[in-house]
Image (cartoon, rainbow, N blue to C red):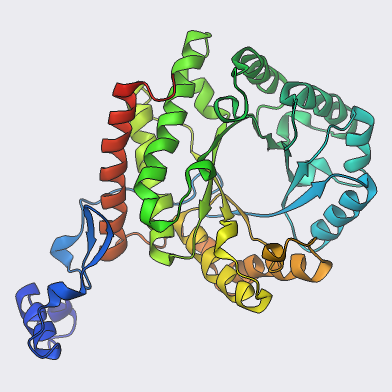
Length: 388
């Protein structure tokens, strides 16, 4: 193709390129440059047009075009007013999707205090419980009552409640999940109530295929169990989201998110869903990728955030640079973390392209390699009834 556009540069075949590579390596075989990501996933140092997988449609964000939500999390343990103040500061700084991490039970009145001054109609509100005896259904019911008082259009509100029965309870409260699904359908149809927590399986880039296999296997188990409770897979899929972590391995992170979309669409096809609602992927930076140097973490967070966005994250949480020090985030560390996303959107314009990685021979190959291995593992887990 290059020769057709620029006649002075004639086409060069793959054989010629490889011969030149070996010449530049002074006789050393180019195969020595192969990267073995996993036992049966080998990455070459160069790819060519004939190596590109079969053409596919875009794999990027689809729920909101190419827009991703700039997110920030706030711990709620002691002072409700402090968490509220941090959230208001974040919203003023451009946060679009606040996440409240509840470290203790709060009453409906305290939830109202937590949301004081926050325009529910203008954001995506997300809440997760991190304490024993959590009751996400009751939390959702409380929020519904608040939403009906505070919002002019409750049915247009967006957000999520973290509800992952298979991971968070010894006896999965599926009856509560079913009631929650009926509740959001009636009152908050744009809310996600079922979260498939792929972060639980995250073990670094060397285990990316395993992570994907277990994540979709858990999601498939939810569809099967909910079907037994009268909830169709298509209906359940409308109210679920995936939560995943990205490491500091740039290209693996991009390929992993893209592979997740391919894999989940394969699962949905297995349930007879041919035109599914877009899969929502929420991305967090893996905590173990930080070290004790906040300056290093700021730089690392930029490439991690970029890989998540190129991979197709629908919502992204960037860790404050002092998180590894096990100290509370500061106004400065939160501002720098959110500004990473502002830079990637308003200066790099990554929101202007649906699937920036599409057509990259290398990333497409890596995407397919991860998806192929993860799918084989998924089939093994299904046969063994891993989540039953």
